[in-house]
View 1 (cartoon, one colour):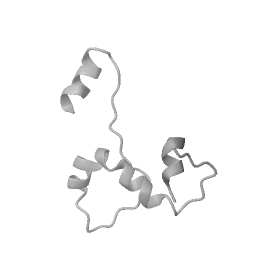
View 2 (cartoon, rainbow, N blue to C red):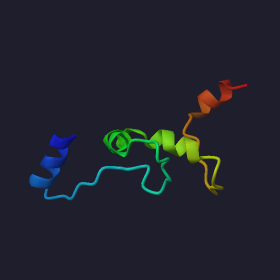
View 3 (cartoon, helix red, strand yellow):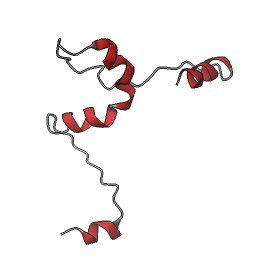
Length: 73
C-alpha cells in the first residue's frame, strides 16, 4: 500500500488517508495499538458486522440477486 499512496500523492497530487474503521470505536487497553494500526484498513467489514446490532439503522440493503433469494428457505 505504500507504493499506491506515494503514487497518488506524487503523480495525481491527491491526499491519501487510509480507512480506519476504529476511528470512533472504543479500544480495550489490552489491545496493541501498533498492531491494530497496521491491520485496521482490512477490518472494516468485521467492525461493521460487530456494530450492526448496536445501532438502529433506518436503511438496510440486500445485494443478493432475486434468483438467489428464491432459493433460500
